[in-house]
View 1 (cartoon, rainbow, N blue to C red):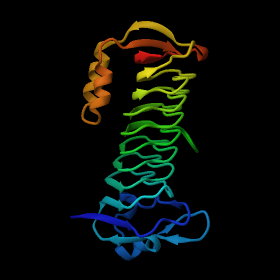
View 2 (view 1 turned 120 degrees about the vertical axis):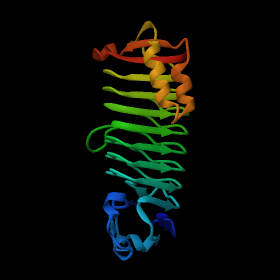
View 3 (view 1 turned 60 degrees about the vertical axis):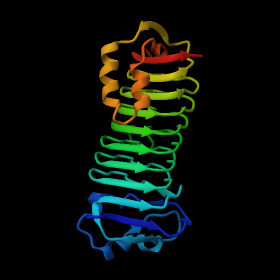
View 4 (view 1 turned 30 degrees about the vertical axis):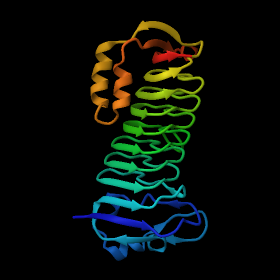
Length: 268
């Protein structure tokens, strides 16, 4: 069966909560019921049919044709199936996801993957600030996020579990207050990487470690080889960086009695 398709007819005049458009919430609904679903907004009431042309198909495979930075909460709370957005999305994409796959061909706003517990997110363009970070609720605690472009500030803030890959650069304070998990930055990490980091691992092509991180010698090869093998299907760039020989290892953040690690190809 073909995908259930939502064709955006025009740019939304206000921000929309698109969290109802997930496979588990649309399962069992007819086309007329779907078009009448309300999308919470900042001003006037809007239903799905007011902005989208809906084509019947398998609700386990959703395609949103046409994106907008005002389409918020795409894939929020998703537990199964797949959502593909042909364009950009707004804030909190994939927030609270527990399963399934969310693919965005364009860019994503702030707080993508916030509170994520499982599943996979792929962002074809750039991601905004606070990627995987806590907004209302907890930060990311599972699953995998791959950003093909760059990300804003505070990527991986309070990351608890899971993997975030940024194939470009990151903004300032990547892996800030990190509790566990893995953040891989294939480009340049912004200022103050690992600020108040407690545990977990940050890889970066280039970064300037804070004075509160201590050089600890060579990185563990076995761990990196296993991680690179797991990353390879999702990001060959990340796998290549993780497996590279000669990465400098720094432990900290000792300012917070942390036991995290920074693994950096080039220190600046």
